[in-house]
Every structure is written in C-alpha cells, then in structure tokens.
Amino acid sequence: MIFFIILSVATTTAAVVLRGRRLRTAARWGFGIAMVVAGATHLVKPTPFEQHLPDWVPGPSVLVAGTGLIEIALGIGLLLVRSRRQLVGMATAAYLAAVFPANVYVAVAGVDVDGQPGGVYPWLRLPFQALFVAWALWSTGHPSARRRPARRSRLNRARVRPSPVHTRPERSETVQTRGSSTREGRRSWSSR
Image 1 (cartoon, rainbow, N blue to C red):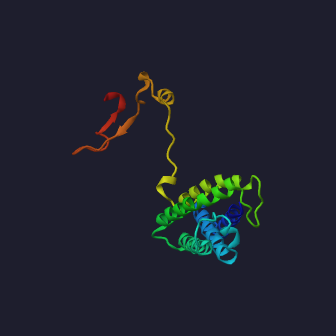
Image 2 (spheres, helix red, strand yellow; image 1 turned 60 degrees about the vertical axis):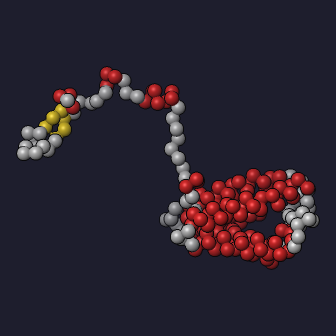
Image 3 (cartoon, rainbow, N blue to C red; image 1 turned 90 degrees about the vertical axis):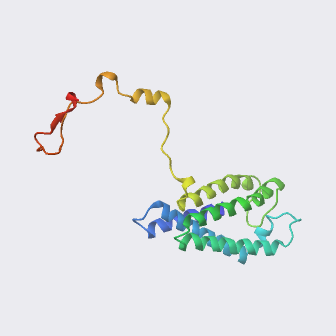
C-alpha cells in the first residue's frame, strides 16, 4: 500500500509536469520513480524487507540489497531506456511476480513487519501486486496490455445487419473511365 501511495503521487506529479503528454507516459514515469524510491528504501532501511523472508532463506541482507539494486535499475530503465521500453516493462512485471511469494509469506505466516500494520493489511496488499504488474505492462506499451475491441455477441451482430430491402442507398457516383470525361462516366448505384 505504501508503494501504491508513492506510485499514485509520482504518477500524478508526472502528469502535471509532463502536461500535454499521454497518460501512459505519466504512468511510466510514476512507476519508474516509485521503483527507484522503493529500491533506495531497500538499501537505506532493509529491516522491513528482510522480515518478508522466511528464516530458512540464506543471506537475507544480501538478497534485500540485491533486490533494491534491481528495483533501482528497473526504475531507471522505465525512465530512460526508450528503445527497450517494452522489454523493461516485461522485466519489471517478472520481478514483481518473483517477489510476490514474499508478500504471500507475510500474509500467511502473520509476520509482524516493522512500520506496517498487521491484521488484514498483508492480505489487502496481495491484489495490488496484480495491479502493479498490469501498470508496468500498460505504461510501457506492452502488446498484452493494449486495449482490444470488444467482441459483439451473435445477437448484437444480427441486429446490426442491414435488412435485405435496404442493401445499398441510391446515390450517383462519378467514375473516371479510360477515354471518357467525368460527366460521361457518371453512374448510379441503382443501375448496377
């Protein structure tokens, strides 16, 4: 939820600063800024992130520092790498999927994480991970996140079909044929 707040504020700020650009660009900038902030937080205050790991995971401080550096690199990639934007979006989505089990562990094991409320909070965070994955893909223009036209049902298609009586409207059309003037080539739909 803290990441969501940072993401929302950063995206809103980017939308104001980058006025006139598409919302997708502001969303990408917001996500990049949020990733850099989250990565820096991993390095500056690693304890809450180490608490997301079970006791059997070796070297939690090294792992948290590594994930912090990865988040900073992904955030910078979202901000700067224009030619590989979709690739950075996919890498960010893959990273978010890879760290999701740590969030599940906190919720299932009831781990008390410093600076975060307990109770239902860890459970409420879980669906946000899917939102973050979708945000990373959409903001980078990944094809899987593009809007597709809605399919119409058979019933709707049947209603839209023209009736046999009104197949073509009657109108005249100017046709230029070889060796004729424009006036000579005039035909109407009804004469076809």
